[in-house]
Image 1 (cartoon, rainbow, N blue to C red):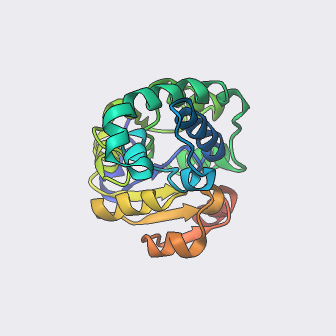
Image 2 (cartoon, rainbow, N blue to C red):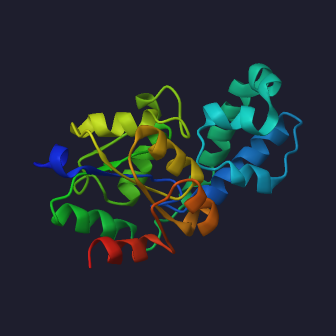
Length: 219
């Protein structure tokens, strides 16, 4: 349900993986193992640097168009299963649930802007106990192209009938997508990108954690 005033005040579009739940390193391991299953060994640090991209973008970015064309679907399928073995270890980041609850209590419109697989998004909604404190959420079925393309931003805004908003994320890809969609972005360091990288990618401000961001937004 859309909060009254979301059109006028703008929505908060909040990334999930790496921002609200501590998943980036789990995903990096899953991708590493998925590539290995197909006899491709990529440096784990390089894979981590691509966290924030969706699977439709990541394989080409890391291994090139030829690998995407010949093995892309198989590698993505492997990653899905391998990450599924790790998702039970994932925990919310400090202050994540409280941020959502406080924004809701303040009457702000909140969309969880994720391109994760639907079953993963459902898991995170339960993990964060978020269904009653957010206005809407997205998943992979809502976008044709994932970040850094801006499709996710547009889909999230459309969910609540807003024309503008602020993106909250943890990766340079969140910032680039927000910039391409013409909205500002706030970021946290929990995804593993540095302050300088996030600033250079367009972040209006960078915070140590969601807990620090929460204190700034809702003093």
